[in-house]
Image 1 (cartoon, rainbow, N blue to C red):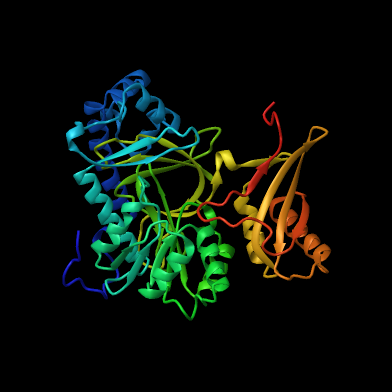
Image 2: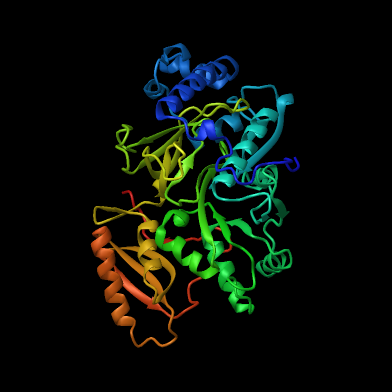
Length: 448
């Protein structure tokens, strides 16, 4: 998959007619794709035929996009169970195995890999979307793009081919040690890189410790991040941008569908969704009713084209918010305003729901703190108590009490939660080279 010759580098859009169409046109396109996709799933997947029949629904019942709510949910547990029941790919599969050309896999909490299969057409559609997404973030054929995501069955690995498709010089670095990655970025003067928010921060700090000024000694001007909420938290994004002298663009993807399904354009205000590939629902986790525009709910996804393994109403467990308002860039696709956390990451402290991302915004906003933080939850006398550990930048701890009081006040005003604040010396908390672990839940019998 080499470069496309004679590509117009000054064009604003990868596919202008598609990306700027009206909301009515988006809905008409999605409805047409949905009807065909549900028929494909029903006709070719043993699981979906049984599931739809048991729920008393049929693809012919779909007359509007809202009718998708008549169909049953699936989740990660269902995927894992069906794969184990009908190895190796499960009976959600809707094509013969000979048509599968690629699989990604994720281990999940049980350690049992769940495969995500692709036909050649599925894979080509995915790469075209990755190119479209990179283009919206400003990547161009004259860029040198360093792909520093894991290539070992990780669905983010092949996304580098999207950068190659638009013509960028692509460096398949993978998850090499930080010092080696910095050397590669410096030697080849990479202009763009993709990693997690935590690792972007860690890599910048490592560069400084190695005597490298990321802003002066490196050429990176675009950082794509995914895997954690930080890229859509303005305070986190701004701290990383200040460290690198580069723009940060948040991307979102999941192995169960394909690499990156949404990403920031150069306006950096929300993540444009791949609406021609995936139907989005944002639902109240308890009532399963749609939430209003801008409100938080669980992200539920339905594929519209992926033929190898359709995903019909997949509950992601991610808590997100969306808007359908037009973007200043001219693109009209729905925008995800951020991944606020996961249902299994949500903490309930004295009746208040709180996500680690809510606290991250406070930690990253205070420039007297390093931005690192850790949440410790304990139960004392049947009451949950939250301790937030933060790091100061100064080596002198003379102002620790003042910093703690200030942070506690901000936390209370933003979340309504009171917490004990512990201020630590710099470099006390562990740094993450992939996804950061921010929560230490020491409670037992939390749900009893």
